[in-house]
Image (cartoon, rainbow, N blue to C red; front, side, top):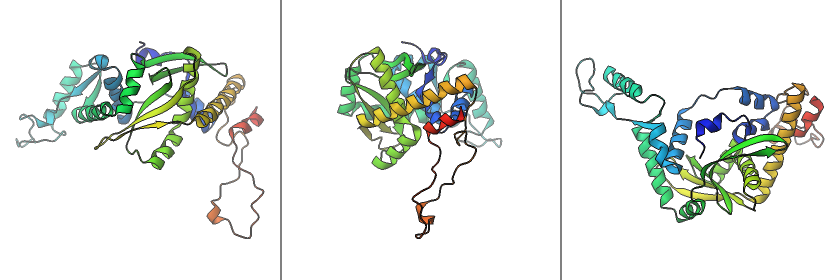
Length: 295
């Protein structure tokens, strides 16, 4: 199995970068050129996935910061017992701990405990266990291929003979709220790309699903199947973005959100349009296919 650091060094397009092309080619280029700084949520997510999918490797890459703020030696400058993380004692202890664990990613004890609760919830869900059993050792699987002639890579959480599952953490599993959040984050497009890579490397018809787990108590779990028509639609959208991407590479022109037109008609909410105004003929914001005029 390829380690994640090795995977990151592969020069190829990936789904997490490609989704920025939904906004514009300029945004896609910015995502390609920028160096992502790991956020607290990203750090937790990667640690959670490692603990869930490759627990044998967790200790090699991650470490849990002890609760130094609860030590008896943690005192204020006035000598009073403290549970604050803002004391000199706590800061010194963390500094010493960091020196002993260079190269590893840190998780707070509270984050580690939260991850364990989430994993326990996943293990208690029969549908999830069936998926994990069907995947076997096919976890954190790196796949390579081409989409629209563009070298493409993907790192699948799991792969079975009948579907491509992906594990996601969420603050809310509310049906509509999560659906909108998934749309905004481009989950379906990423999954469509994963499925295409899976098809190229492991021939056969597969479905796709998201295994969702809440990040807070009661750590509810649900499996969302992604409809085929939606995946097909998102794969076509991904291919269109890749076609525009290739043109940008060739021309050196990377249109912004205006599609290279310079101007667009401002969006007006329906509630703001007078009843007596004929709005049947109006220009709409540039879509992906409108980029053609920019070249």
